[in-house]
Image 1 (cartoon, one colour):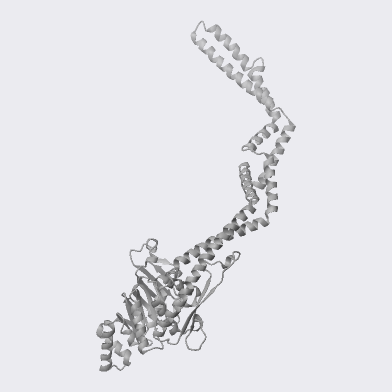
Image 2: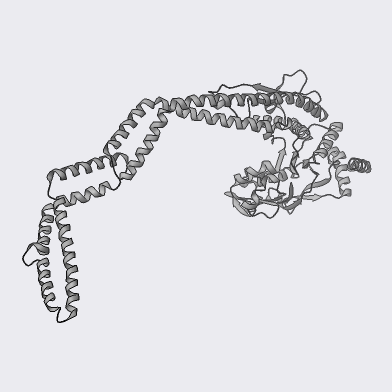
Length: 557
């Protein structure tokens, strides 16, 4: 519910603050006093379009601030916007735009509009958005029928069925390309497998190619190394042997020479190992043009595969596994389609069963709702009106995915004939603003939803009625106020006298400027205001007495 409203520099309002309470509240005032500005300001703070024309003359900006009791449906906002309790909204309008705030945080204006349906419903001469959209007709009927759990089951079945149909379409598309794709995949698989690639192979081949391309230089270097190691007369091996003999002759004279002789032996072993490695390297890498040609061909093959399938051998091997899996999937597509068809058939049967059951519940509830609405709107001044609910059922076939709706197989529309003898026609097209307000009041009275302290605003719901009908409307509004916060703009004393809280809107001119003010009335002030509603500007003792009696009687009721 709305707890606080502040409006600054909006049209004829300079700065007013309103504190609203639970229950039934009334706004009254002379025609043109500014009652509609209050409603417009609430629309603004809930994200409706605003313009610079609304800014009070001589001011740079207008603003509207509102504090709402946070409903359970919006509890997630607590953490998102660090709300400590209530929900604070603000809207500012400048000459070239505006800003919106939620909990003091700057947000897009559309964010406020998203919250509006959880906070306030406004029913005025031109505010029946609810009745202008057919999906709302269906939703209201489901709420009345207490069929939302069944509707959720239908929605789950529809989602599952659409998922299976989507998968079927994907497989069908693949099936059309299946033969061509299979041939292509088989070619790629054979081409890669025929190559017999091994990890690290490319690096090894490049190293071998480098050796073979430099075979002459390498051979010369190896020959020189072998000569130095042991082939020449003055090779390292020969010199070490001679040195070892000399140290052997010196060892009787000093034991240190014996240790030196043993170290020379280790050097001889090392030189021998180096010589063996050089000989093996020479034998392994003898110059071979044929071998170099084979390596070049192999590297060329690898490069060709890399251009097609990956940047390296590992990528190519990964790609091979991927296309093998695709080939396997395509090869099994017929079996998958067959299994899928069976699953679709079962899912469609489930959807049809649940949707048909929901359809029966809706049609039974529609007949009951028709009677209740006619009874309620008769009490609200539409005594001869005929109200009907058109339900059109159309079961789709499994191939019509776009017709498989989560809402079920019904199209629902409210129809009305305001006058006897007239054919019923779409309510959203022919009902007047006053009729729509009363019908919405009837829906709210009948409805089984009990939104905790949601605010319902009825703007001049009393248009074109009076007398006993006005009393019926007032009683209905007071009954609604047990479950919602109800705010009503009225010109009728019968309705005003039923309210728990009464606000008077006045317009005055001071120093050639117009000002709109709002005041919450005491009991005696209410007596005077209701007397004005009864007799106009000429208030008499009789009208005051009638107003007091009416107020006391209706407040006790």
